[in-house]
Image (cartoon, rainbow, N blue to C red; front, side, top):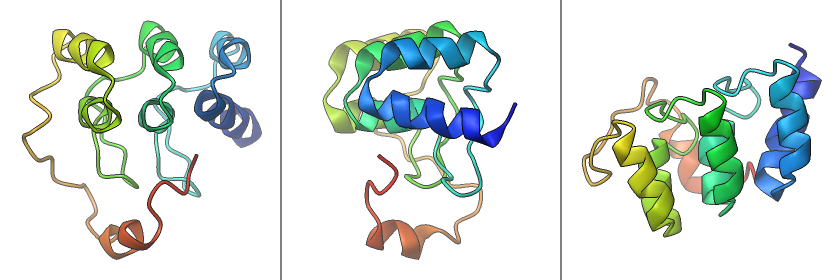
Length: 123
């Protein structure tokens, strides 16, 4: 996997370019990777960009419904709740995601001051 392919997949996921996302997924780009420059997962980023069809595609191709996205400090189900995507939230809950009202601790914690200043920068 090259970072360029992942970055293109990430941008396409945020923009809702589902065919380009499908192309990269079929060519082996890791849908659970969070590039060190982004620190966001494609799944959470596309959910926050209100792209539920892309989120469904990523989930169909192995995106982890429980994976915390470090930059936003959100799991996919928390992002779906925040974005108001009730059907996607229900799917994530059916896949084992916990109630989005329950807080999830960040793995690092050092990003908190930056998150506050850069909300939604990734998409």
